[in-house]
Image 1: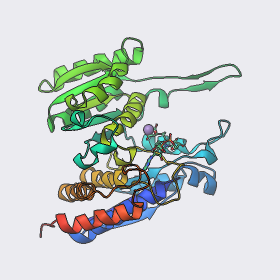
Image 2: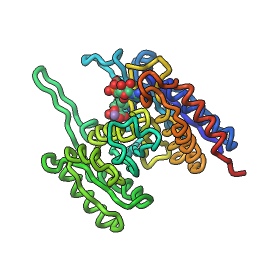
Image 3: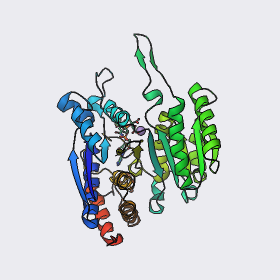
Image 4: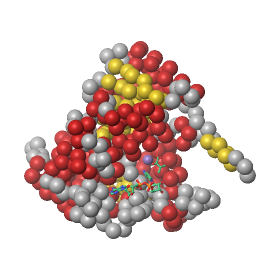
Length: 359
Ligand code: NAD
Ligand code: IPM
Ligand code: MN
C-alpha cells in the first residue's frame, strides 16, 4: 500500500524519538512492500521560533491531507515564561481539536523484563493489561480562560454528545477485550462529572448491555491504579483526569518512555504520539527511550493504515528488544543505559528475526 505520513518532531527529545520511529516504519515498509512517504513539518516551540505560531497553517494543511500524523513532543523552558503570548502546547491542543481527535487511547501493559524498573511490587504487575481512553478535545483544557489582576479561571465544560462519543469508543474497545469499562469522574463534587456519570450509565445500558460498567471517583482511582492494576480493562475518563492518571500508570510499565498513544476521531486522520513530553532534562544527548514512539508508530499502522500484522510485528520487535535487556537509562540501573540509536537498532534486528511478511 501507499501512505502519506506527516512527521511532527517538535521540541526537546521529540526529534530524537521520532527519527527512531521513522526508521522502524521505513524498515516495515521495505519488508512488507509498502510505500510510506514521510513529510516533516513544524509544531510547538520549533514552529514558534521559525514562524511565530505554534501550529502554522502549512502544518495543519499537511496533516489534514495525510493518512496519519506521527508526533514527538512539544514544549520546553525556552518557551515557558508565564507571560509568553504563545506557547508550544497550544499547537498540540489546536491540532487535536482541528482534526477532531476526541479519543486518546493509552495502553499500559508492563513487560516482564522491565518489571524491575517499576517502583511497584512485581507481583502486582504481572497480568496487568489496561487501556485508558482519555477524552481529548473537551473539558477544562478547552473552556473559556480568564485572567484579571487578582484572579484567574478555566471553565470546565462537557456536552452530552462529547461524552457519548468517547464512551461509545471505550465500550467498542472493551468488546474486543475483557468487556469491562471503568468510568472515572469526580461526581461527588463536579457538575460536569455528574453529567458524565449519567450519560455513561445510559449509553452502556442502552447500547452496550454486554459490557460491565463500574464508576470510580478519580482520587481513589489514583490509589487503586497502583494497588490493584490487574483489575482494570478499559478506563474511560475526561481530559485532565486522563492526562494525570496515565503519567501515573506509566510507573506500572516502569517509565514514561514506554507508553504510546493514538488520538482518533470520526475522520480519516489519526495522530500518534508517546504520552511523555519533551524531557528537557535529557534532550540533545541521544539517551531518550524511543520505545513509546516506536509503539505509537505500531498503533499508526493498526488504526490509520489497517496493517494489523505489521503493527504486531513492531510490537513483537519492541518486546524482543526489552526481553533481550536493551534498556535506555530510564529503565536501566544507574549509568548503564544504551543510546536511543542502539535501542532503535535492537528493534530493527528483532524485526528481521521475528517478522515474516506474508507473501
Ligand atoms: P516530560 O514527560 O517531558 O518528562 C518527565 C520526566 O520523564 C523527565 O525526567 C524526563 O526526562 C522523563 N522522560 C520523559 N520521556 C522520556 C523518554 N522517552 N525517555 C527517557 N526519559 C523520559 O514532562 P515535563 O518535564 O513535565 O514536561 C516537559 C515539557 O514537555 C513541558 O513543556 C510540557 O508541556 C511538555 N509536554 C509535552 C507533551 C506532548 O508534547 N505530548 C506531553 C507532556 C509534556
Ligand atoms: C500530553 C501532554 C499535553 C496534555 C500537554 C503538553 C498539552 O501532557 O499529551 O499528555 O496535557 O494533553
Ligand atoms: Mn500529559
